[in-house]
Image 1 (cartoon, one colour):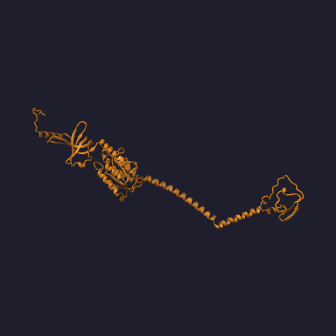
Image 2 (image 1 turned 90 degrees about the horizontal axis):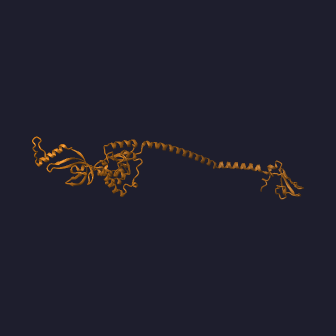
Image 3 (image 1 turned 180 degrees about the vertical axis):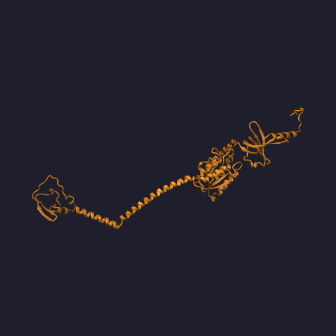
Length: 399
């Protein structure tokens, strides 16, 4: 109780006056809006309003989300969730009741990580995160669908990257909300892209969101979103937040990029590198073509030479030359040529060629042949000699 400082008389209030005075003090002395770190306990819907208790280790206070505000919440808290509340104080003078009116609520990091782990453990047995189900990205996509918030700095960076790397690919932008309780809207957008991908020539889907806190990315930890991404007929690339942020959507995606810009880098080839590669291939193809032409030219020349060699006139000429060579050889080896030089041939009584004195005996009749005729002789004596005489007719007398 307070006393009047001048008179020492205590101020007198009615209950209504006291409660009204307290309300006035609160309105004048407390911030119109504030942030409150707390844990949610016993959230309950009553007549469309969400009532809950906000507490920490030492104290608690009631809180309420009015029905008109409930659809606009970025996060719908559950029992035991750590949250950061944007709120203001409500004081009902009739019962002197104090309550935090919740204007917005965001999960704390601990709550986000617990939800991430819960959904991950729930989905992992189904194989939805398995590397075996990851699909390869298209090498040169004709068109890609880009799902992100519009406008945003992340979108501007991605479009600039796309123009620099591969301007031939069409970028089809589908605006989506990327924060708050918008999981259902994102799922509908992904399903719509999947249904119309064939007609639009879309070959991949990019789900992107610029940087922010891990709590801001909690919308991408939803079970429904994970299942929708897994059912998408297109390869999915995610670029959500920063490099250290990993969401459930990242685990399901066919390719997880560290940032939104990195998602476009992974999906689109670099036109400068592609041009260098084309130049290299052109050089290789030119060398291969020249080698093939040279090989074919040589083959044609060989075929032409073979055709000449197989022509009847050429064969006849070869045969004529061969006959001439054989005739010259026959002439060179003919005994008549030696006989014309003054040599003679000795033959026995039966006409056999006498090659050695050992074949001759005294009194034997021989026939001597010269180039110009024959003569019969009788051996009167023999005179062996020790000198080695080479018989020039040995080769000519072979049968």
